[in-house]
Image (cartoon, rainbow, N blue to C red; front, side, top):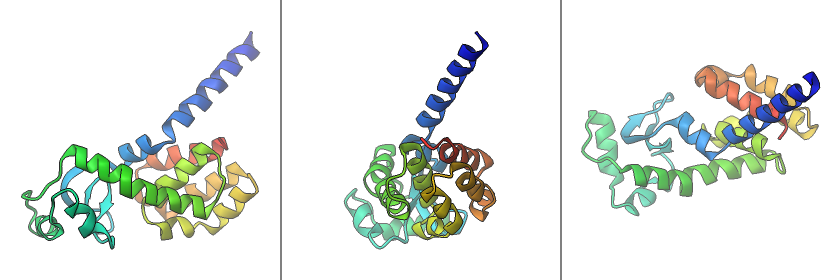
Length: 178
């Protein structure tokens, strides 16, 4: 009976981790701000972590009827005159920001299991250069040494910069090897 209970708990844990390691979790981690704000690195940002210094930011915003210049003025003046809608924020996230981070994760460590890839994508949301700085983690991932890879993340500056929940979740996603 005890073994069966342990098995159910393990299945529950794996399913719980897998369901948390996703695009949805990155969106929750980032939060949604409909008006311009400065992120932790003082980069003007809007929506779900959409970096306004991206080369395509002006074009992306224009496609939603928003002028980048006006959005940046809001940031500098701490005003809310050029905001986007929740729908636009989600659409930009799903069609521009998340796919770019996911592509970075795929190039960093191709062929990773779904939960591991989702965690790497979440880290890449801080910029592809941030993820690529994890040289030892990458080596551990290639060896399928999920625990060591998770520990590399744990001891990083990135984990210190983000909320502990975000770091811990990504560590669990990587450690799961799923």
